[in-house]
Length: 169
Image (cartoon, rainbow, N blue to C red; front, side, top):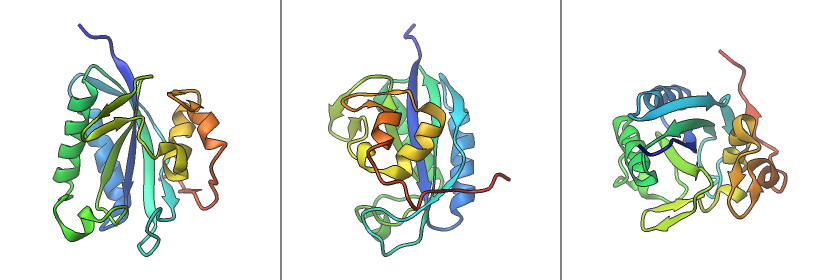
């Protein structure tokens, strides 16, 4: 049997009820086969990135121990997005960096590097995105980040102003 791998997943939403969408997605991640959710960050309010003419996002990160391949894990993430109402074919969802009812990104998969159509791990923009690095560093600052040292090392190189932890509850 394949040994489990620690994977980092980023969650975000800014349409509909984003706090509810992110929390519900975390619950869905707890139910993935051959996978155990081991840590979840707080929720953060973050300014939109890439396209600033949209509402702020709610972002978070989780760590999972999984025996799923990165490709299979990604297909489960996409299924959770679809169940939340995300349709990648709609006008908003297809806009690069546009508003989303839910966005799940496979940020890290152990210390592996994957570069194939539809899947790049580490996430190709992770090192630029405080909205993903801040919550991920909260639960895994020392995680290996291939090509960048650790998650904490990468976070020290970005401007995290504007990333605000929401109160618990």
